Image 1 (tube, rainbow, N blue to C red):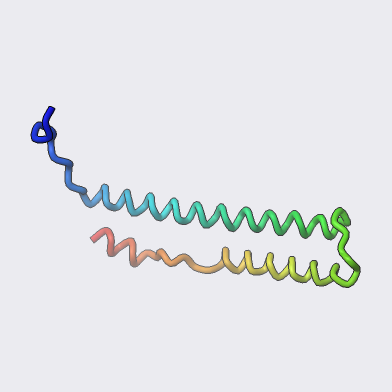
Image 2 (cartoon, rainbow, N blue to C red):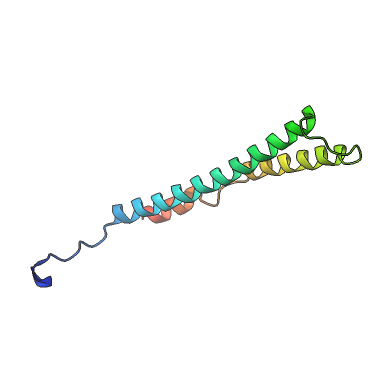
Length: 96
């Protein structure tokens, strides 16, 4: 078969372009959520081990470790509370 006998590739349609953009958006959000979840669970595990006494830290560092764990947990909560950069206006612009 020669190259000339193959049909040309179809041009992208608006729906296929929108599907590709949505796929990229879902992948980006999914990876971000996975990374945040992994670090959040890691901090939770270490914090609970310190609080339960499974990990022994010097008495001076105990309150500091607990404070740092609480600050890290608060930062994770704040990151979840931030609005997404993808709003309805950008979706309406893509639809037009």
